[in-house]
Image (cartoon, rainbow, N blue to C red):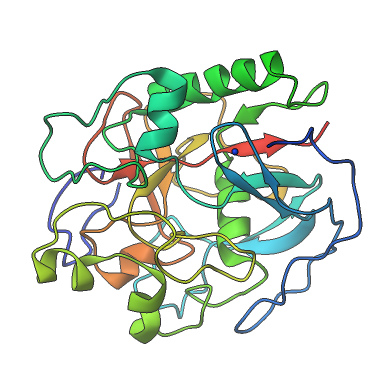
Length: 289
């Protein structure tokens, strides 16, 4: 999304709801591919909220963020660092859909824009960072008013570290399904099955295979806003949240018009928080009090 040069070459750089469950024994499904060894602290079963989001439980744990020097498509801002996610949380299984956005915000920012297919289950695109934050606040207020949130729980954007941790889902390879992009079409909407097939738009969520923790479209379909300001060097340590200020906000996940390297777990992107387009969306975190 940032510095929109050739996408293909990879030159882009830059519904019945219960209250939030208390911690309960439930370990996410076994990840595919080569595994890391996180310290797991499980938090319960998946939840559903009042706008139809499925929220997957994410355990606390540790992982290596970034990529090894040997990874094909690696960029200079992916220096590997050790990260600990100290508290479990819930993450939406998909990016926010057009139907969910309309329910919460009552608007259609994608209306009349190019490269968009409209539909309740299509991603909400043309959403800038500020609007994504506003959605999280509005959803929190609505769920609290309806009595569906425990005291202290809230919706927000994931940090960049939380995003990569959940994308990897315990794996250490370039993609959550392995080191090679040969199977990318099973898990993602990317250049090879969108633009190359004359389907130049974000596709309905959840139509490809999920990653090992039950999260869909972590590779491709839409880039996803994260809470952090962008910095060229990743911040390691416990619960890193990026720099205190900056110019660009972080985007992760690759988009439907991009080649495989841009859809890797470690790939990073950035843009001005007022920027929006047809490949930009977001998913939400639900915090555990």
